Image (cartoon, rainbow, N blue to C red; front, side, top):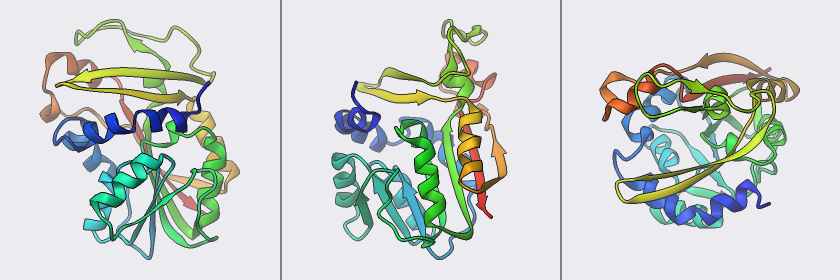
Length: 240
């Protein structure tokens, strides 16, 4: 079986086209702004882990963050550098960050930890590079979302968990929209696994959000089913 990192490298060109089409996905329509609500203001140094082609990294820079991007896919890391050659983009695995101990006061992992093969080790690495009282802010596919599926696309469709919420499992979502195709390769993990990883790394949860799908972002009636169930989860944790 290919690693999640290898799967994302195989999908890199599809992801670049997907991520860079304005208003194409939830990032542009509402999710980025919802996530920014849990971030502290710019501090000394920010690291964006699993930065992909760099769309959030560039936005953080525009907000005043002195930011380093870390990405495991060579194609995506190269694409991030091409968009902003002045930005510090480093090719590395999230579980082996190319950073010194206690060198950043903010770590961001936006929609990447569910795509990291060694998630607990990655969170341990994040703790290592955070300064005392530094913060980790991350967004993931909500574990209830990744545990099941709606039975159909109607607004009142039942949501069904056919397997086990409590067991980790790999999955792939194949999506076609407006002529673009993308396969998202991830691993479902129950919430406890993320919380235990934070606990083991000495990180204390300060905030947890289950943002709602906003009414103004509805583009089709089928989207209304997601107003009954969270798509994402946002967590801010403090290094004690």
